[in-house]
Structures are given as C-alpha cells and as structure tokens.
Length: 394
Ligand SMILES: *Cc1c(COP(=O)(O)O)cnc(C)c1O
Image (cartoon, rainbow, N blue to C red; front, side, top):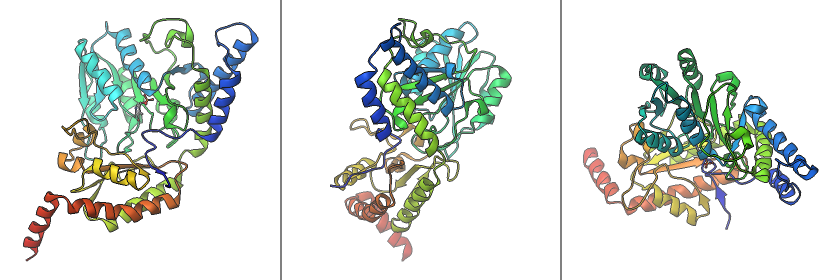
C-alpha cells in the first residue's frame, strides 16, 4: 500500500544525499578524531567540516557549536549547564508552559534541586508575551529558556523581542530551535540568543545527533564527565558518521528554508478539510506559524482513533494529545492555550516535508471526511449534539 508520511515534526526520513555521505563515513571514516595519525586526522577533518556546516546554517561561528547526542541532550546541557555554573548568582529560571518535555522536565528536575521556576503563560495562539517575560524577571534570575517555534502547533515565538529583554538585564537566553531549523530562517547572531538547540533528525539527518550553540563567553558546566572532546562540554568519542550526516543535512536544509510550496499545500489541506468537515478548528497562530505545520481539532472525533484509522489507509500523522495510558492526558500545549480538554482530545497534527506531494494531500482530503463521518457515527456525544441542534432549529 502507498504510504503517506505527514509527521515530519516527529522525525524526518534521512535525505538520500545524507545517507550516501553516512554510508561512506561508516565504511571509511572509522578513525578516532582524537588520534594523531592520518586515519584519525581525516576523521577530525570531516568532523570539523560538519561543524562548519551546522554553524553556517544558523549564522554562528564554527567554534560555537558543540555536538551532542540529540535535541533532548542539548536542552539538558543548556539548562543544567547554566544553572550549575551560575547557582551562586541566583536560583530563578524562566521558561514557558509550552516547551518540549526535554526542557519542561529538566526544569522540573531543577525545581527538585531547589531552583525556582516561572512557567510563562501563552495566549490562545500559543504565543508568549514578551511583556510577561519582563514582569517575571527577578534579581536572582539566571536563565531564560523559550522555544523558537512549537512542535505541536508550529507557532513562532517573538524571540528577538525576548532576547533583547534578556540582554538588557544580562541574563543568558536559551532557545530550543529544533523545529525552526530548515523551515524558517534561523540567524542566531541576528536575534542574539546565547544558547540554541538543534536536532539532526528533524532536518533529514540521522537520529541521536544534535548540537548546542554556545555563544562565545557563555559560562556553562558540562553534564557528563570524561575526555576533552567537544571542549569538555560533551566528552566521549564523537559519533563521526552521525555528525557527518548531520552536517550534510544542515547544508541541504539551507536550500529548503522558507518553502512557499509547503505553505500552499498546507493551506489547501486545511481549507479543503474545513469545507468538507464541520467543526474543524485550527490550533496555533494563523500566520506566525511554521510553513509545514497544521494542527486541527475535529470535534467529537478522538485523535488517537483517527490516527489509527488513517494508518489503516496508509497515512502517518501525529496527534496533539499525548495519550499515556487509560487516563488520557491532553496536550500541555493546547491546555496552556486554553483549548478545553474535550476538544484537545480531538486533535490531529499534520506536518509536511520536502518529500510531500500534491497527491499526498489530495489523498488525505479524499479519505479523512469519511473517516470522521464514520467515527462520529459511533459517538454518543455527537448524537447528543445533533439532537440538541435539531431541537434548536425547530
Ligand atoms: C524533537 C524535539 C526535541 C528533542 O530532540 P531529540 O533529538 O528527539 O532528542 C526537542 N525540542 C523540540 C521542539 C522537538 O521537536
């Protein structure tokens, strides 16, 4: 059966050119980059070339890039690294309610270690208000961490306004830019963050590789201890083939940024679905949003059920609501935006990629209305709703 992959915010397929470089590297670039002989120094050269590629992707200096074992690790390094280095100066951290779990749960762990955390609210579009950030800053604030764009809704944050506030107060500013790289322009020198997180597998590179941009002069403690690799910030022999793949992916992603084709496809998907299905609502900012991301709630149809029904039809999509066990936990992002739980449970997240075609989108537009109709047919709440609206109409 034809498979249509529309969950690029969860992960992306490895780009064919990335795969080619990695295959080569796995076979030939096996040297340890910390050794002195040719096999090692060639690996070192490739490693530094990858670092240059990643740095230039975000407008950073090469030496400001530290490779990590993924986005989660880079976020942990940023939060724990800064807090451990600055704990004598204060113990207050500001973040937001809509961060990725790797930031939120790091913050919670720091809270257990005695740090105070302010979780900034968002508006109904999922946007943080820079004015709220200003108000939350205290004399003992040592770190601000606000994501560049949200993985569930695609809402893009007013980062530059917030980095300016942080800079005025001399507080380090970290941003999780995992979802923004390759989708919108990310120029770290331009908006002036002190730390920035990137993950390779969200930009058509391999999984388990990422990077933390650390602006020159930022004080940070490592979270792992070992050798001198990555200037001691991330000891352990580097994943050379993975990093080479990451570098290639970063280079390729430059060409795909600001892809208007995806905006057109995404908006056609949304408009056609809203025409064919009643009670569809858009979650996230209508304009200030990643070009590839469409998060919608389809009332009276449970998200997980739709994901499974679409999977049977060859379509892979995500759901906004993270369903743990029998106790369905609605998405913390939608909850922070004020979406009621019963609507948050009815959520689908489509995230398009460079491999998404017009036909893929047409196929979804063709099959989803029937899936919804069938599932609403099983819903006692929907029947109740119909009965009520009929009564009102009489
Ligand atoms: C995927 C993701 C991460 C985690 O990256 P991993 O490489 O999967 O650990 C962090 N933040 C955001 C916003 C993400 O989408």
